[in-house]
Amino acid sequence: MSFIEVITTTAEKKDAEKIANSLLTRKLAGCVQIYGPITSIFPWKGKTQTSEEWICSIKTRKDLFPAVENLIKEIHPYELPEIIATPIVLGTDQYLDWLDENLRK
Image 1 (cartoon, one colour):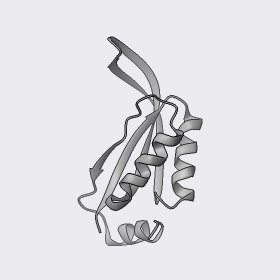
Image 2 (cartoon, helix red, strand yellow):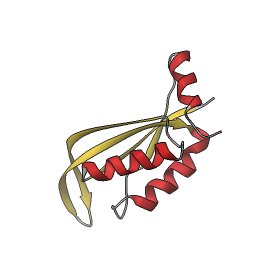
Image 3 (tube, helix red, strand yellow):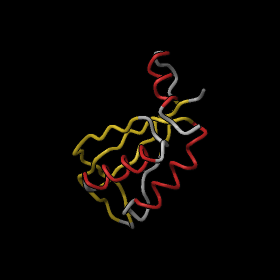
Image 4 (tube, one colour):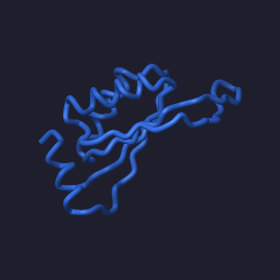
């Protein structure tokens, strides 16, 4: 199995919770952690922006990434949401087994 952590950010905690619940309901994520607020500083449309955001840390399998990406894009309020994935290189067998049991087959 190949597992990944997908990250997206939102301006409102309620949007992060909506994304998390939608992913979990569809078994596209086994776990979503929401943390924040954080401060993000980034260029947008020719100006440096500063905004308070919430991070969704989504645990899933690599093969589910396209569905995760599509769902986030469907419900995310941003014009261009951050959706990035990194591999989970190592994890305990027990945790990864639990994660896989809670994901779509």
